[in-house]
Length: 58
Image (cartoon, rainbow, N blue to C red; front, side):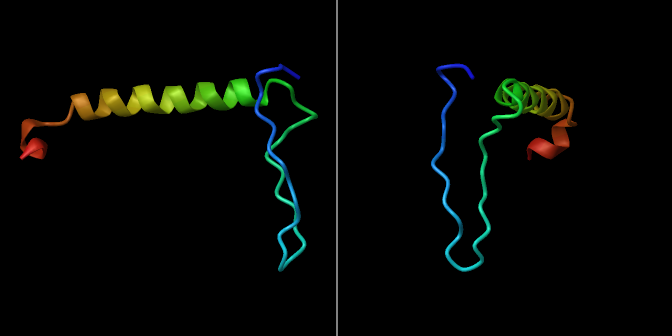
């Protein structure tokens, strides 16, 4: 696991006992892919907005 990867403390939700664990010890590249997906969606959104007709800017 990369040293820079943020690790989040996990604890079961007090009402249901369900543990939500965002850490992925089984997949060391998970965070890298996740960041890449966020960047890709952001770039595509900028392209879409840039191609909107001027009437949407009013």
